[in-house]
Amino acid sequence: MLVPCGSHVPDLRCFKPGGADEPERASRDSPQDEAGDERSVRCRACGYAITSARHAVEVEGGHVHTFFNPAGILFEIGCFDQAPGCVVSGVPTSEFAWFRGMSWRYASCGACGRHLGWQFLAPAGTGFFGLILDRLTEDPASPLT
Image 1: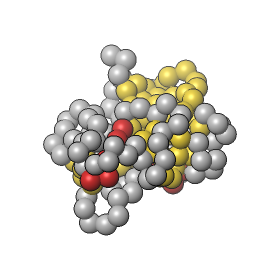
Image 2 (image 1 turned 120 degrees about the vertical axis):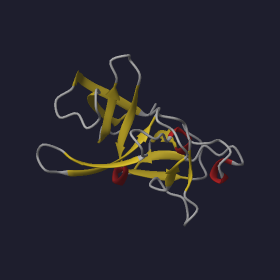
Image 3 (image 1 turned 90 degrees about the vertical axis):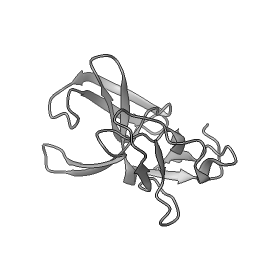
Image 4 (image 1 turned 45 degrees about the vertical axis):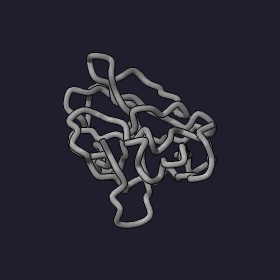
C-alpha cells in the first residue's frame, strides 16, 4: 500500500511504500482521499484526465522509477494500475523492457495524442502503466472525467 510521505504537499512523486511486493492501490484512507476526492492526474499538454492518484501503485519496490532508454533519454515514471485516459498502441515487445519479465507498448493521451509513457504487461495478462511524471499534472479539485 502507498501513502503520502507527509514531508510536504503531496504530488505525483510523494508516495512511500507500505510493504507490498505486488502492485497495490494507494490507500483510500490516505489524507488526500478523505473526502472521496479522485485527484485527477491529467495530461500536462491538454488537461485531459488520464488516471487518478488513488491508482498509484508500487512496482519492484517503488512507485517512482528512473530509467534511460536506448537513445540515452532519461525518464522518471510513476506506476499506475489503471490509466483509462490513455490510448495504447503498438505490438507488445520485451526489447529493452525496464521491468523483469514484462513486455511494453506505448501509452498516449486519449485527447491530444502526446506520448505519456508505456503500458507494461506480464505474461499472465496483468500489468500497469508507467507514466512520465513531467508530462502529467494533478488536479486536486476535479473528478476523473
